[in-house]
Every structure is written in structure tokens, then in C-alpha cells.
Image (cartoon, rainbow, N blue to C red; front, side):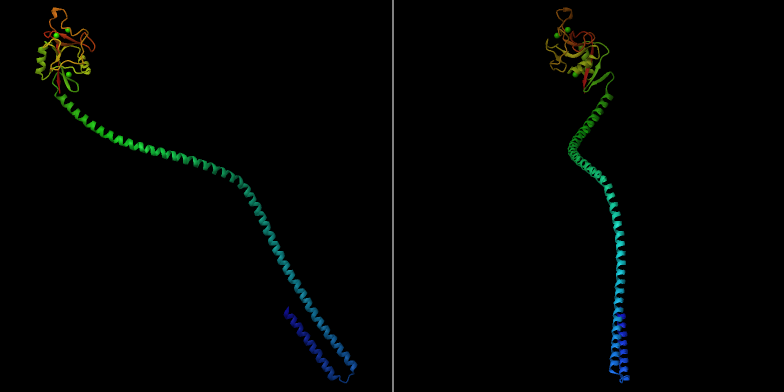
Length: 313
Ligand SMILES: [Ca+2]
Ligand SMILES: [Ca+2]
Ligand SMILES: [Ca+2]
């Protein structure tokens, strides 16, 4: 645009120069013309110059007008393009907004459900925490009880081991006793052997037989021993007599009779009032006729009876 204006100015100057040259030439060549005609020519030249100036001004104005109009058109097109772009972006944003709104509406119920599940899980967590604490307390208590039981177990294990050792020792002793038990003797109670005769003799002869066997007539020390002897079911002498002092019953080892005693009813009677019975100074177990436990009877020492020997081992 500026080049164009400069070009028009230059052309205008050239035209003015040409007009001046023509005027000069006219002055030089037509000096002889009259002043009236000269003025007329000068007026025409001036008018022509003014016209040229106007022409140039008009051209510049038009050019500027077209140029401005072109710029406006470009700006309008650019604005239209921007408008279209913004409209598309707005539509896209509107679509995105609708989509996000729909997604939000869909997510809202899920959010509510998840919130409830979270609350339930929180409640469950609290419950489990309490249960865990209670279990921890129970665990600690059980651990202490276990430790105490472990100590008791260790103590019992030692006692068991000791008892097993004692048992083994007693078993060994018992086995040895059994192996050395003479023919005809029985081991029934833990500390004694017993021999029941197969024939009958007087009390004195019976005791002599026991002494030969390394034993003596049986001394009854307990209910258990009394019951055991009853199981022989024989009328047999035992080691009890009052032959030294009437009524003073002593065992064959010299110890006086105390409890327990197992006299049958109305015994001892020392023969009662029947002279045929004589003195009754020796004791028999009359298990053939008198049962069950209280089966002692004082009897004449001369009568023949089975006998029971006892060897304390
Ligand atoms: Ca005894
Ligand atoms: Ca007597
Ligand atoms: Ca009697």
C-alpha cells in the first residue's frame, strides 16, 4: 500500500513537472502571446494539476477503502472460523457435560452402596477387633495354664518314671520270689507266702511242720489276710493260742492278740461246760461251717486239723 502511494506521488510529481515544463516551454515559446491567453493557460494547468492531485487522492482513498474492507473480510472470516471452532468446542463440552452428568447419576447409587458396605465393614472390623482382644486375653490365660500344666506334667513325668522304676524293681523282686517259691506254697499277699497242708495234725505237730519249712503258723494281721485265708475253705490251725495263760491269747511270735480279731459268736469258750471238750487253747479257722469272716474258734490243741503256714519275705 505504501509503495502504491509513493508511486502515485511520484507520478503526480512527474505530471506536475511535465506541466511545469510545458508551462515553461509555453512561456519560452509563446512569450509573445498575450497576457490573457497566458493566464488562461496557467489556469488550465493549475486545474489540471488540481485534478491530478484529486485523482491521486481518490485512488489512495479507494485503495485504502478496499484495503480496509479486505482486512475486515479476513478478520470476519477469522472470527467466523473462531466462532465455528468455539461452537464445536462448546457442543463437545456440552456433550461431555451430559455424559459426565449421566455417569455421575450412575455412580451415585454405586457410591451409596459402597458407603453402606464401608460402614458395615467398619462395624465388622470393630467387632473383629474386640473378638481379637478377647482371644488375646484367652490366649494369654491358656498360655499360663499350659505353662502350669507343663510344670505339672514334668513333675508327674518324673513321678511316673520313679514309679515305673519302683514297679520294675518290685516286678523283678516278685519274679525272683516266684521263681524261688517252694512247691505247695502260694503267693497271694505282697509280703508273705502261704502253705496249706493236705493232711491233718495236732496244733503242736502242725507248728513243727511249719518251722521245718522255715515258717510258722499264720499270724493274721488284717481283714485282707483274713479274707484270703477263708478262701482256703478248710478247718485249719492258725498261730494263736492261750496255752501259757488261760484267756491270754498270743500269736506264735509272742505278740498279744489285739484287734482285729475274728471270733465266731460265743467264742472263745474254752470248751464251754462240756468236760468232753477239755481245755480249748488253740485257734482254728472253721470255714467249713462258719461263714463268712468271723470264723475263729478255740479248739483242743490235740485235735487234728489242717494247718496254714506263713513265711514273711
Ligand atoms: Ca500274717
Ligand atoms: Ca483256752
Ligand atoms: Ca471253742
